[in-house]
Each structure stands twice: as C-alpha cells, then as structure tokens.
Length: 270
Length: 315
Image (cartoon, rainbow over all chains, first blue to last red; front, side):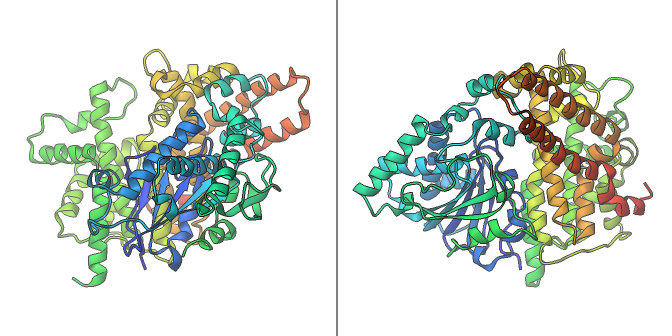
C-alpha cells in the first residue's frame, strides 16, 4: 500500500524534498541534517522502511537542507525558523513553493516532529527559542528528537573530517576551515554560543515550564560516535539518552539489518 | 478505471510534473519537429560523439536538454519495472516516447555514443519486447529514496564541473590537471573547498564537486546494498548512473583513487610536520577515509550491480 505521493523537490532550503501523505493527519516530520550534511544524504535509507510503517502513514515527511557549513549557527537557526513559520502558516504562495498537494484551504499542521542530527540539535532548539521570543504559538505543536546532538560541543577536527569522508584535516588546516566555516568554532566544547543556548533554555523552562517543546523527547547517541562531547550529560531537562550502534554519521542511516534509528523515530510518532 | 489504475495514473502525473523538466520538454519538441522534418537543427550532427572535435557552448546546452529527456524516460522505466506506473501504449506520452527513442539520431546517441541501458530497456518495453516486473513491499520506498539522488548529478553545478573535467572538458583556464594539482596542496585544496558559492571559480567548483561526488558514491552504494533483495530494481537504479561507473570506469576509478591517495599523502605530510598529534590516530583516520570510498567504488566500478541487465542487452 502506497501511503505517500512521490517525492517533490521544494523551493525553500537547499535541495529540500517533501513526501506528502495521501491521508494526512495534519502531522509532519522534518529531518534536519548537521554540519556538512545533506538534506536527504544524511538520512539515507530512512525512507526505505519509513514509508512502510503504518504509524508514518499520516505524516508528511520533509528533508530540509540548509547551508550547514559556511553559515554561522544563528543564521542557520533563523533560516530554519523562517521555514517553520511559513510551514505553520501555510499561505497560498508558500503552498506553491513547497508543491503542497490539494488539501483543504484551512489545512494546518497540528503536530510536527523535528528529527535533528548533530549540529541541527542546536539549530532546531535555537529556532524554537527564537519562535518564543517572537511570540509565536506554533512551537507548542513541535517535538524534538535528537540524533547525536552536538549541544555540548564537538571535537571539531573530527567533525570536519567526518563531514568530508574522514579526510583527516590537520591542525595546520583548521585555521582556514574555521575561518570559512564558523560552526566549527561555535561548536567547540563550552563555546559561548552553546553555553548561551543552555542558559537560555534553562531560564525559559524555569519561567515557562509549559514550554515542554524545548525539551527533547528523545536523545539518541551511538557507541561509536567520537565526535560529540559529553554524551553522558543531559542538556537542561532532556531525558536520558538511548545508545545504539554506529558512528556519528552511520547512526542515522538505518538499513534492513539495523533498524534502531527508525524504531527510535517511530516511537515518537503518534 | 479501477482504483489501482487510478493510483498508477496519479503516479505518472506526479512523476511527470516533477521530472519532465522544461529542458526535457524542449528536447521533446525539437525531436518531434525533426521527426516531421521541420527542425532547424540536424540532430545527427548535434548529438554526435564529443571527441575529437569541439562541442560549442550552445550545442552543450541543447545536448543537455536531450540528457534530461533521456533521464525522464529512464525514471519511467524504473517506475514501470516496479509497477509504479502503468505503461498504457495508447497514452500520447508513451506514443511520443516510443517515436523519439526509436528516432535514429537519438538512438545512436544513447546506444552508440553514450551507452545508456535504461532508454534502451524502455524502448523495448514500449515495443513489448521487455516486460519484466519486480515488486515487493519495499520497492516503492526504495524508488522514493532513489529519486532525490537523481538530482545530485543532474543539477549540482559543482558535481557537474568535476565530472566535466573528468570527461576531458575544460572551463575557462581550468581542466582536470589543475584539479589534480590541488590534491598535492592541501592548503589550496581547503581554500577551494571552502570558498563561498558566489565567489567560486571553476577550479573551486571542481574541488567541491570532487568531494560531493565521492560522498554521492558512498550514499548511492549504500542504497544499492540495501536493495539487494530486488536485483532488477537494484540493477536499473545502478544503470541510471552507469555512464560514470561503466563507460568512464577506467578514468573515474583511476582519478578518484589517485586523487584520494594523493590528498591523503599530502595531508599526512602536514601531520608529520606537527609535533603534537597522535600519529597512530591520524593513520587510522586516513585509513577510514579511503576505506568507505574504496569499498563503495570497487562495487560500483565493477559493474556487478547491473551485470545481468547489461548481459541481456548484449553489452
């Protein structure tokens, strides 16, 4: 049984794709790649089995791409915020940009799950904070699932090399890379950006405990991930992490024999 | 029409909307004019083999349009294989496709000059000479995963520049020799790799395309590995990109391996000159860099994914 329409390449973002449900339940999953990742490539093979799962049948699936190397984290967050804002508003012009299927003109998303990998954990949570600052109400309809989140920082040399098929860029080359790719500096352990994110989320949750969407519903780490820092620590009020097989990049690429990433996501679909 | 036919008709409409891009439509129009004898272009001349001689920029644009058209027909072949669409031979889209694919100058282009398996299979299917179907509960999902990968090579200007250099092409003052030189100069390589798209030269684009293409190879191989239980679908998906892995195999394999090896060596030298780095860890990372790519490339370049399919076509 075919639960989704064929993929559509959509205008917002970089090489972003949408798979629309044939029987939408006003729900969506947005996959967001990390540093040096790609909209679909980061999550490759997720679809091979996701579309066969009855739980996913009513969800529209978006793979959103953005300039995850040469843009600083704040720009990435703002860019993602813009997409989210338009997605929740779903005005006619935006519907055309995302090749939205024919649905009721009053159609709105009621539940959006954001699956974020690595750096995208920072980008997506920051985007939700920005939405709060702007007084938007739609963040209440979002939930976060984080794969290998880099919210406590990353070993940036490894992050750079993982993003480039393990080419081991040495200390002599890092200055050029850091100069041109700002996230490498911003994702260093205990960086100003990360510390600020944590304190802002902490404060928001103290002042507004109802903003539960700032808490990740699920945090997944992998045993073989040598990129992210402090896997044992919990970010603000996030729950305990689940550990699965794989490396920093392979842990979000399920296969027939390795279903863990898919099962983690499915557990959050309603 | 029953529900199943409606579903397939809907699938065809959506695939057409997404992948029958304006450039492909223009090629279709030119082909139809040529079939009627009203074209202002000699298609035999336009669709010649590119070497020796020169293909002008204008001709390159026009030839690209035909590539898009053949890509669209190739996607339809894969879709027909898994029963995602129904090949209704009375439908004008398929009638036109049959005439265009059988038209001598176009046929020569994809059979002789640049051998592409899928347009050949699709023509056979349209002529009822090939009717293979392969379906499972995963075939549509795998096809859905494959479709975005189609655009990596077709639409990415960096990958396109790299492949153009690889195929002997030149852009402005740069060609493959210049790209190869950057592998020996990691600082230069990093500079090219990190240049903003707006300010990138053709050399920068080729470096960025080199990295993207290596990543594509690993991803594409992963998809093919995960579709092993559907050998024909696996073969047809491979055949979609087989020009680079079969026809260009000697060039592509040699140059990619060389590029990776030289780059590794040059980066290693920098580590050797740096006192505070754990040499063993660096060597391990270097091995990982080539391992993923080598494994993927050896499978892709061997052509094993499509061996049976290519044998069927007497290749």
